Image 1 (tube, rainbow, N blue to C red):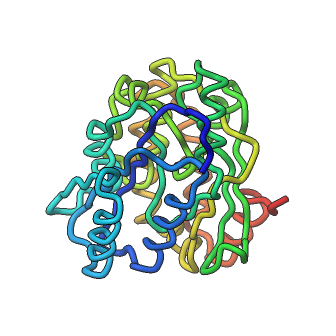
Image 2 (image 1 turned 90 degrees about the horizontal axis):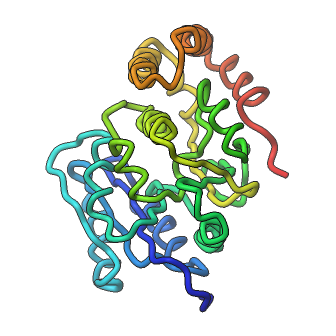
Image 3 (image 1 turned 90 degrees about the vertical axis):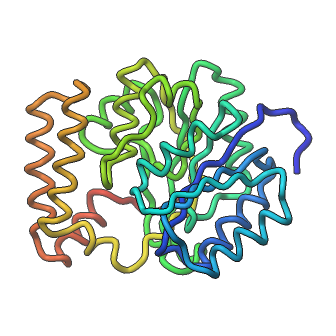
Length: 280
Protein backbone atom coordinates (compact mmCIF):
# COMPACT_ATOMS: atom_id res chain seq x y z
CA UNK A 1 0.00 0.00 0.00
CA UNK A 2 1.08 3.58 -0.61
CA UNK A 3 2.00 5.90 2.24
CA UNK A 4 0.61 9.16 0.79
CA UNK A 5 -1.88 10.76 3.18
CA UNK A 6 -5.32 10.87 1.62
CA UNK A 7 -8.64 11.76 3.21
CA UNK A 8 -10.28 8.87 5.01
CA UNK A 9 -13.16 7.30 3.11
CA UNK A 10 -15.93 4.72 3.27
CA UNK A 11 -17.03 2.12 0.73
CA UNK A 12 -20.81 1.70 0.50
CA UNK A 13 -22.37 -1.53 -0.78
CA UNK A 14 -25.69 -3.35 -0.60
CA UNK A 15 -25.95 -7.16 -0.63
CA UNK A 16 -29.12 -9.16 -1.32
CA UNK A 17 -30.39 -12.71 -1.75
CA UNK A 18 -29.17 -13.23 -5.33
CA UNK A 19 -25.52 -12.54 -4.55
CA UNK A 20 -23.17 -15.53 -4.76
CA UNK A 21 -20.27 -16.34 -2.47
CA UNK A 22 -17.72 -16.42 -5.30
CA UNK A 23 -18.73 -13.02 -6.69
CA UNK A 24 -18.77 -11.48 -3.22
CA UNK A 25 -15.32 -12.90 -2.44
CA UNK A 26 -13.83 -11.46 -5.64
CA UNK A 27 -15.35 -8.08 -4.86
CA UNK A 28 -14.04 -7.97 -1.29
CA UNK A 29 -10.60 -9.22 -2.28
CA UNK A 30 -10.37 -6.42 -4.84
CA UNK A 31 -11.14 -3.90 -2.09
CA UNK A 32 -8.53 -5.23 0.30
CA UNK A 33 -5.96 -5.43 -2.52
CA UNK A 34 -6.17 -1.69 -3.21
CA UNK A 35 -3.06 0.46 -3.15
CA UNK A 36 -5.08 2.69 -0.79
CA UNK A 37 -7.49 0.71 1.36
CA UNK A 38 -10.77 2.12 2.67
CA UNK A 39 -11.04 3.13 6.30
CA UNK A 40 -14.55 1.72 6.45
CA UNK A 41 -16.85 -0.59 4.49
CA UNK A 42 -20.56 -0.09 5.13
CA UNK A 43 -22.42 -3.20 3.99
CA UNK A 44 -26.21 -2.96 3.91
CA UNK A 45 -28.15 -6.22 4.04
CA UNK A 46 -31.12 -5.66 1.73
CA UNK A 47 -33.23 -8.41 3.27
CA UNK A 48 -32.02 -12.00 3.85
CA UNK A 49 -28.88 -13.18 2.03
CA UNK A 50 -27.45 -16.62 1.23
CA UNK A 51 -25.88 -18.42 4.19
CA UNK A 52 -22.56 -18.84 2.41
CA UNK A 53 -22.38 -15.09 1.71
CA UNK A 54 -23.27 -14.33 5.32
CA UNK A 55 -20.46 -16.67 6.38
CA UNK A 56 -18.03 -14.69 4.22
CA UNK A 57 -19.21 -11.42 5.78
CA UNK A 58 -18.48 -12.93 9.20
CA UNK A 59 -15.04 -14.05 8.02
CA UNK A 60 -14.08 -10.61 6.68
CA UNK A 61 -15.53 -8.92 9.77
CA UNK A 62 -13.25 -11.01 12.00
CA UNK A 63 -10.24 -10.22 9.81
CA UNK A 64 -11.03 -6.49 9.63
CA UNK A 65 -13.12 -5.76 12.76
CA UNK A 66 -12.49 -2.01 12.70
CA UNK A 67 -13.33 -1.64 9.02
CA UNK A 68 -16.63 -3.40 8.34
CA UNK A 69 -19.95 -1.94 9.51
CA UNK A 70 -23.13 -3.90 8.83
CA UNK A 71 -26.61 -2.40 8.45
CA UNK A 72 -29.31 -5.09 8.52
CA UNK A 73 -32.75 -4.85 6.91
CA UNK A 74 -35.06 -7.78 7.56
CA UNK A 75 -36.97 -7.21 4.31
CA UNK A 76 -35.78 -6.36 0.81
CA UNK A 77 -36.27 -2.65 0.12
CA UNK A 78 -34.56 -2.29 -3.23
CA UNK A 79 -31.15 -0.81 -3.96
CA UNK A 80 -32.07 2.87 -3.59
CA UNK A 81 -33.61 2.59 -0.13
CA UNK A 82 -30.92 0.16 1.04
CA UNK A 83 -28.19 2.62 0.06
CA UNK A 84 -30.18 5.45 1.65
CA UNK A 85 -29.90 3.54 4.93
CA UNK A 86 -26.15 3.23 4.46
CA UNK A 87 -25.16 6.80 3.58
CA UNK A 88 -25.84 8.34 7.03
CA UNK A 89 -23.96 5.46 8.68
CA UNK A 90 -20.76 6.20 6.72
CA UNK A 91 -18.26 7.84 9.07
CA UNK A 92 -16.35 9.73 6.42
CA UNK A 93 -17.29 12.47 3.96
CA UNK A 94 -15.90 10.60 0.96
CA UNK A 95 -17.96 7.57 -0.08
CA UNK A 96 -16.95 5.13 -2.80
CA UNK A 97 -19.70 3.00 -4.33
CA UNK A 98 -19.35 -0.59 -5.39
CA UNK A 99 -21.66 -3.49 -6.12
CA UNK A 100 -20.89 -6.78 -4.40
CA UNK A 101 -20.32 -8.65 -7.67
CA UNK A 102 -17.93 -6.17 -9.30
CA UNK A 103 -14.16 -5.83 -9.12
CA UNK A 104 -12.21 -2.60 -8.65
CA UNK A 105 -8.86 -2.16 -10.33
CA UNK A 106 -6.20 -2.23 -7.63
CA UNK A 107 -5.40 1.49 -7.96
CA UNK A 108 -8.97 2.72 -8.36
CA UNK A 109 -9.36 4.36 -4.95
CA UNK A 110 -5.92 5.95 -5.07
CA UNK A 111 -6.63 7.52 -8.48
CA UNK A 112 -9.98 8.91 -7.38
CA UNK A 113 -8.66 10.19 -4.04
CA UNK A 114 -5.78 11.91 -5.84
CA UNK A 115 -8.27 13.50 -8.24
CA UNK A 116 -10.44 14.82 -5.40
CA UNK A 117 -7.34 16.09 -3.61
CA UNK A 118 -6.36 18.08 -6.70
CA UNK A 119 -9.94 19.17 -7.51
CA UNK A 120 -11.58 20.01 -4.16
CA UNK A 121 -14.55 21.63 -5.91
CA UNK A 122 -15.70 18.26 -7.30
CA UNK A 123 -18.50 16.48 -5.40
CA UNK A 124 -18.73 13.29 -7.45
CA UNK A 125 -16.14 11.61 -9.64
CA UNK A 126 -16.59 8.42 -11.62
CA UNK A 127 -14.84 6.58 -14.44
CA UNK A 128 -15.35 4.32 -17.43
CA UNK A 129 -16.00 0.63 -16.80
CA UNK A 130 -15.10 -2.66 -18.45
CA UNK A 131 -17.82 -5.31 -18.67
CA UNK A 132 -17.26 -9.05 -18.38
CA UNK A 133 -19.30 -12.21 -17.96
CA UNK A 134 -17.45 -14.76 -15.81
CA UNK A 135 -13.77 -13.81 -16.04
CA UNK A 136 -12.58 -10.21 -15.79
CA UNK A 137 -9.77 -11.04 -18.20
CA UNK A 138 -12.37 -11.74 -20.88
CA UNK A 139 -13.80 -8.27 -21.51
CA UNK A 140 -17.02 -8.18 -23.53
CA UNK A 141 -17.53 -4.39 -23.78
CA UNK A 142 -16.69 -1.00 -22.31
CA UNK A 143 -18.96 1.80 -21.19
CA UNK A 144 -17.42 5.24 -21.56
CA UNK A 145 -18.89 8.35 -19.99
CA UNK A 146 -18.32 12.10 -20.50
CA UNK A 147 -15.47 13.67 -18.56
CA UNK A 148 -16.24 17.35 -17.90
CA UNK A 149 -19.06 18.81 -15.80
CA UNK A 150 -21.00 20.54 -18.59
CA UNK A 151 -20.84 17.47 -20.81
CA UNK A 152 -21.96 15.29 -17.92
CA UNK A 153 -24.99 17.49 -17.22
CA UNK A 154 -26.01 17.48 -20.89
CA UNK A 155 -25.56 13.70 -21.22
CA UNK A 156 -27.39 12.99 -17.97
CA UNK A 157 -30.61 14.42 -19.39
CA UNK A 158 -30.90 11.40 -21.69
CA UNK A 159 -28.71 8.64 -20.25
CA UNK A 160 -26.68 7.99 -17.14
CA UNK A 161 -23.51 10.07 -17.25
CA UNK A 162 -21.94 8.02 -14.46
CA UNK A 163 -21.27 4.36 -13.95
CA UNK A 164 -22.86 3.96 -10.53
CA UNK A 165 -20.44 1.30 -9.28
CA UNK A 166 -17.44 3.48 -10.17
CA UNK A 167 -18.31 6.72 -8.40
CA UNK A 168 -16.66 8.34 -5.41
CA UNK A 169 -18.76 11.12 -3.92
CA UNK A 170 -18.97 13.47 -0.97
CA UNK A 171 -21.46 12.49 1.70
CA UNK A 172 -22.37 16.11 2.39
CA UNK A 173 -23.37 16.63 -1.26
CA UNK A 174 -25.42 13.41 -1.30
CA UNK A 175 -27.37 14.39 1.81
CA UNK A 176 -27.82 17.96 0.57
CA UNK A 177 -29.50 16.49 -2.52
CA UNK A 178 -31.86 14.40 -0.37
CA UNK A 179 -29.94 11.10 -0.36
CA UNK A 180 -30.89 8.05 -2.44
CA UNK A 181 -34.61 7.57 -3.04
CA UNK A 182 -36.85 4.75 -4.19
CA UNK A 183 -36.65 4.61 -8.01
CA UNK A 184 -36.32 0.98 -9.04
CA UNK A 185 -33.54 0.54 -11.66
CA UNK A 186 -32.98 4.33 -11.73
CA UNK A 187 -32.01 5.19 -8.15
CA UNK A 188 -28.61 6.35 -9.37
CA UNK A 189 -29.95 8.58 -12.17
CA UNK A 190 -32.41 10.19 -9.74
CA UNK A 191 -29.57 10.90 -7.30
CA UNK A 192 -27.38 12.41 -10.04
CA UNK A 193 -30.25 14.68 -11.09
CA UNK A 194 -30.90 15.72 -7.49
CA UNK A 195 -27.20 16.38 -6.89
CA UNK A 196 -26.79 18.45 -10.03
CA UNK A 197 -29.92 20.45 -9.18
CA UNK A 198 -28.52 21.13 -5.70
CA UNK A 199 -25.28 22.50 -7.16
CA UNK A 200 -22.94 19.50 -7.14
CA UNK A 201 -19.90 19.63 -9.42
CA UNK A 202 -19.22 16.51 -11.44
CA UNK A 203 -16.35 14.77 -13.23
CA UNK A 204 -15.33 11.42 -14.65
CA UNK A 205 -11.78 10.12 -14.92
CA UNK A 206 -10.80 9.09 -18.43
CA UNK A 207 -9.79 5.58 -17.43
CA UNK A 208 -11.34 2.16 -16.75
CA UNK A 209 -11.28 1.70 -12.97
CA UNK A 210 -13.94 -0.98 -12.40
CA UNK A 211 -14.69 -4.36 -13.93
CA UNK A 212 -18.46 -4.91 -14.02
CA UNK A 213 -20.07 -8.34 -14.15
CA UNK A 214 -22.98 -8.23 -16.61
CA UNK A 215 -23.93 -11.90 -17.08
CA UNK A 216 -25.75 -13.56 -19.94
CA UNK A 217 -29.20 -12.15 -19.16
CA UNK A 218 -28.39 -8.44 -19.05
CA UNK A 219 -29.72 -7.67 -22.55
CA UNK A 220 -32.83 -9.77 -22.05
CA UNK A 221 -33.60 -8.05 -18.73
CA UNK A 222 -33.60 -4.68 -20.50
CA UNK A 223 -36.62 -5.74 -22.56
CA UNK A 224 -40.36 -6.17 -22.06
CA UNK A 225 -43.16 -3.96 -20.79
CA UNK A 226 -42.34 -4.64 -17.13
CA UNK A 227 -38.86 -3.13 -17.57
CA UNK A 228 -40.28 -0.23 -19.57
CA UNK A 229 -42.81 0.59 -16.83
CA UNK A 230 -40.02 0.73 -14.23
CA UNK A 231 -37.98 2.95 -16.55
CA UNK A 232 -40.97 5.23 -17.10
CA UNK A 233 -41.61 5.51 -13.36
CA UNK A 234 -37.99 6.45 -12.71
CA UNK A 235 -37.92 9.01 -15.52
CA UNK A 236 -41.12 10.57 -14.17
CA UNK A 237 -39.44 11.11 -10.81
CA UNK A 238 -36.51 12.76 -12.59
CA UNK A 239 -38.97 14.96 -14.52
CA UNK A 240 -40.49 16.05 -11.21
CA UNK A 241 -37.08 17.32 -10.03
CA UNK A 242 -37.08 19.89 -12.86
CA UNK A 243 -33.80 18.54 -14.22
CA UNK A 244 -35.34 17.48 -17.55
CA UNK A 245 -38.08 19.02 -19.65
CA UNK A 246 -41.29 17.23 -20.58
CA UNK A 247 -40.02 17.01 -24.15
CA UNK A 248 -36.81 15.28 -22.98
CA UNK A 249 -38.94 12.99 -20.85
CA UNK A 250 -41.20 11.99 -23.78
CA UNK A 251 -38.29 11.56 -26.19
CA UNK A 252 -36.42 9.18 -23.89
CA UNK A 253 -39.59 7.20 -23.19
CA UNK A 254 -40.21 6.77 -26.92
CA UNK A 255 -36.69 5.48 -27.52
CA UNK A 256 -36.83 3.16 -24.51
CA UNK A 257 -40.21 1.75 -25.56
CA UNK A 258 -38.81 0.76 -28.94
CA UNK A 259 -35.70 -0.79 -27.38
CA UNK A 260 -37.80 -2.67 -24.82
CA UNK A 261 -40.21 -4.17 -27.36
CA UNK A 262 -37.87 -5.28 -30.13
CA UNK A 263 -36.58 -8.89 -30.11
CA UNK A 264 -33.58 -9.58 -27.88
CA UNK A 265 -31.08 -10.13 -30.77
CA UNK A 266 -31.87 -6.66 -32.16
CA UNK A 267 -31.62 -5.13 -28.68
CA UNK A 268 -28.21 -6.77 -28.30
CA UNK A 269 -27.15 -5.23 -31.61
CA UNK A 270 -28.24 -1.75 -30.45
CA UNK A 271 -26.26 -2.15 -27.22
CA UNK A 272 -23.20 -3.29 -29.12
CA UNK A 273 -23.32 -0.59 -31.81
CA UNK A 274 -24.72 2.40 -29.91
CA UNK A 275 -24.50 1.98 -26.16
CA UNK A 276 -21.17 0.24 -25.65
CA UNK A 277 -17.64 0.60 -27.00
CA UNK A 278 -14.63 -1.59 -27.51
CA UNK A 279 -12.08 -1.30 -24.74
CA UNK A 280 -8.91 0.53 -25.74
